[in-house]
Image (cartoon, rainbow, N blue to C red; front, side, top):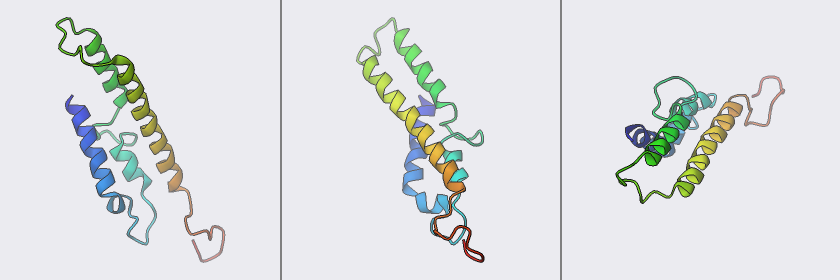
Length: 114
């Protein structure tokens, strides 16, 4: 569960420090890869790296629990929430990657302006 806790901390940091992380406060290019590093789709340092494997391991742990420690876990709800999280990470990756190539000024193709 340490990777899960670390992932939550990273997402909280991303939300809190969005402007600094993405360089939205500077007159420079947007850094979508900074977002992608935090959500684990670029590099290997994020606790969210291969998060789908974390979810799979948790689910297997819940199913193998012969002592009933995790009887309170509703696997149907867990699966739905897990899929929402994984899809959210995929969507975030897609948008962050796409934004790297977008020109937010509306002046794309105008000589001397970007």
